[in-house]
Image (cartoon, rainbow, N blue to C red):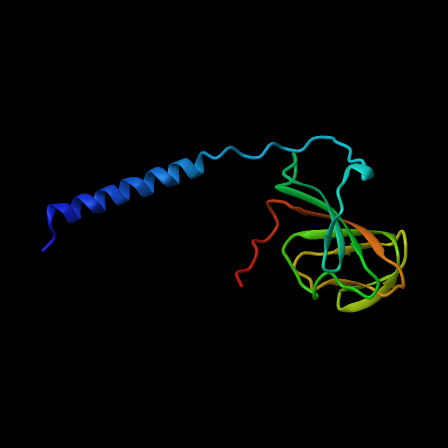
Length: 152
């Protein structure tokens, strides 16, 4: 038999859950990014297992749900991660070094100034095949049309 205490606990749980969901929904939206510049010398290089990364920005803009930019320095002979895919599109601009990029199922050898576009949900990757570090700028974005990330 359900006691008055059980009913009271259940009601308090429902009210608490509702209150938490309301507070979570009232979280202010991140401020939209407007025109801005980033000084290379002010971007801190954070070492990692394959080289270093400089985080630039991750924020919504007036037309994008999210714009994310970073700069990777990939040591000779290294790859930042195994080939992968994600729903957001990505642009990579090679600043220095020699890499191979997996583009539409084929590894392409590229040098400084090269540009790589990775379409939504297409398998891609990048590896440093040169004898010196490779540095590249990564720009990726999400819009209302970006498919949701698949659950793994």
